[in-house]
Length: 114
Length: 114
Image 1 (cartoon, rainbow over the protein chains, first blue to last red):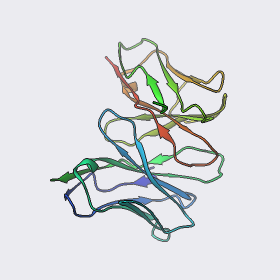
Image 2: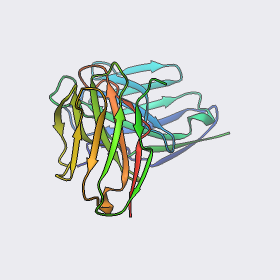
Image 3: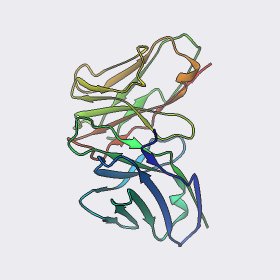
């Protein structure tokens, strides 16, 4: 039962253009969402998060959009840079629930071409 | 470096042997998590500690797995009688507060069972 889904295994974008990474979830109890970036041989690095009371959160070149009715979120990176090339994971959790675990998607490999 | 640290970074063991991994969280974080990541998948939750109390264990954590956090600081994850299916990246993360706020990951321990 994959509660968090990233249906695009890979994405290739030209440097300077926008990268859009997508994520869908099935559990309506999730109310907090995060994006992580992972380079090979390193642990995931936290990028940006959003709670379900918002529909947008922005931090520099990174913006996360949340569409609760569609159970969909997306990460926009603009402008994309070669150093952004990595695997991006979407994760979801429940605020104040009994569990503190995060449920991760399977990741999207972003390649930013110079 | 005040991030999450894990030791060892790599471990190769023969099937049937026991292995133990260590995680040192960020010092002011009282919440500690273990995840496992296999090829092509996102991290999967294994267990969660709040201070020294183990508050949740995933069904992925079979009887051969045990985790401890004896003084509420570092944690250990032991796998007894390793199997080839245990080969994975074992990730530790810590978090400073309640809820699914961002968790900060260590570099992981890569386990290979031959």
